[in-house]
Image (cartoon, rainbow, N blue to C red; front, side, top):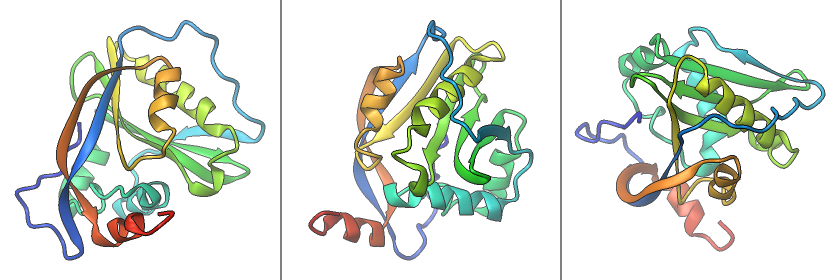
Length: 194
C-alpha cells in the first residue's frame, strides 16, 4: 500500500487522526461476464503523467473523501511512484471528459493493489462505477497476479465497502490507523449534513 511517510512534518492545515480502514482482497479471477462500457465511455492508460496534472485529478476525485496522501507527498517521491514501471494509471473518459481514474500498484510480486479508484463527483450516480471497477479488477488480474486487493476507509463514499463486496472482494482485515487529513475537510465533516 502506498503509505504516507508520517515521520515528516505535516504541512500546515493537516493533522493525523485515527481512521478505520477495511482491507479487502480477491484471490481468484471474476467468473462473470465483463460489464459493458457505457456509451461514450472509454478507459485509457495515462503514460508518465506530470505530477501537477496527477495531483489535480487526485484532488478532483478524492477531495470529497479527504484524500490527502498524494497531495502532501514530496514532489520527488510522488514522481518516483507514478512513473515507476510497477505503477499503472488509467483514466476513464465519458462524454469527452475525464470521469475518474484507477491506479494499480504491482510493486509486490504476484499481487496488484488497486491503490486509488474513484470518479469525479459530477459522474457519480450515473452507473459508471460498476463498469469502471469491473474493468479495473480485470486489468489488475492481468500480468500474473494471484491476488488483487484494495482498502477503503470510514471517510470514503458511504457505498464503497458494499460495492467492493458485491464486486467479489472479501474483507480480510480492519484496522484503526493514523492518517493525515486536512483540517478543512474535518471541519466540513463535523457540520450537520457534512
